Structure formats: C-alpha cells, structure tokens
Image (cartoon, rainbow, N blue to C red; front, side):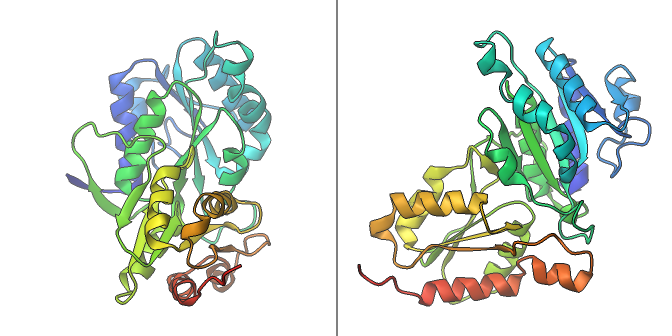
Length: 328
C-alpha cells in the first residue's frame, strides 16, 4: 500500500491503464502539456506522446463526440469534461449517442469510453460549478455512473471504467482532491456495481456516496451509542441493491445522505426500493438528507448550510433511530 492524494490516485490509474493498453487515449481541455486543469494528467504527455494525449478545443460536445467515434472505431478513449456541470452542453452525445449506440446498432458497435468530470461541490464554486447531477446521468439506460470517495476507490473505479465495454461516467470530488489515503500497489480493480460497507452496525443503515461520504464517516465516528452501518455506494448506476437491502433487513432503518438536492434524486430511488422491498422489516420511516431545492450558493457560510454537515447527519441518525413506525 502507498499513501497517495486523491488526484495522485487518479493520475496513477491513468498511467497504468495507458501503459497496459495502447488503445487507451486521453482527450480534453488542457489535459496534455498543462497536465490537466487540476493536475490529474501530469506526465502523461511525456510518457505516451501527443497522439494519445490530446488537448481539445473548448467544446464539450466536440470532445465527447470525438471520443464516441474513436470508441466505435476500436479505441478506448478517456475524455475529461472539466466540471460535472459542463456535461449539460454535451448531453446529446452522452445520452442520445454514446449510451444508445450498442442498442441501436443491435450490438454491432460499442462505446467503450470513459467521461471524467469533477464535482466541485464543497469548494464554494457557485451554482454553475457545484451541482451534483448524478441523478441526471443515472436515469439514462446504457450509461454507468461511478463516484469514488477515497483515493483507493477513485483509482480502482477509474481502472474498472476504462476496461468496461460500454460508456462509463466517472465523477471525481474536488473537495477530496488533496485528501491522502492508502492505495493498493497491485492492479486492484473496484468492481462497478459493488458498494463498500465502511462500518457495520445494527441500529441504522446509512447509505451515502461521493462528496457526502467523508462527512457521513466523520459523523458516524463521533457516535458511540448508535450502531450505524455505513455504506458507501461507490456506483450510482447500477447501484448495489443487494448490499443495501440486506443491511436494511438487519437494521430496520434507512437514512440516505447525499449532496444533491433531495427532490427527484438517487436517494429517492433508493428510498422507494427499500420501502417496497423491506416494508415489513422497517422499524421507522425511510429518511433522506440532502441539499435544499435551490442553486448552490457561493458564500462559504451559505454553502456550509446548504450541504449536509457531520452534525446534521448525526442529528438525522438520532431522529431516525428514535422514531418508531406506527402500525397501519
């Protein structure tokens, strides 16, 4: 194991996968000579040359469209859409083209491509750079969505995404960019669709992912009298239903915590599934905790109030554990 920062783990994954397979390409704004807008592609141009590491024009639609054509021609491109918010100007290429090309060609074409984007939530970047839009992407059949909250998972999920035979959207957390963690030295892959049980418990299941996961972990670490089973989803789509359902059947309670707005989100899908599949085992109503239905604010104190903080999460845990579902 080696201690790496979050961005260094991503950089290592890119180096390893490009060295392993010469079909892997990297395309995006400032990914070549500058080494990426946040440093994740440092050293790749020198190691693999300008044919495989290419700076692009400032056009997300062109970047994703070019990658799709390369993928259909047999390459395995990785594209960087700098901020998750910017996928909005490439949604036709992502949703109507890449996610559907295999289905619409009866399997004659595939799109083994990766789209990487940073979510800058928690870094006071405002309403056009701080959005958590994973629910948009997860709603699209044919598109996988992953989000590692630790350096090890960021590396392992990216490696799995690059090797996948379909399009995978990889979200990365700018708030965790300099967080250091242990990363395996071997060629470890984090399977897409597999959640991580970070802590076991018997009183409540807490499901989280992405930028909210570290704050949830902090909240749980401070709670000595409540047995919280903490699950980091890691893959948004397809999400690990079996692990979540098994946990809720044990604890009888579910709290879903995320940084996206509560309404119409991934948390709603998880809550609805658990309510339907575990109705008889639930000892309290399913609870969700997320951002309010409003744009992300710039001001530090407002953003801190906007996102679930450890104290908010701990309070929601205690309220859920104390609540007893009334018999119908």
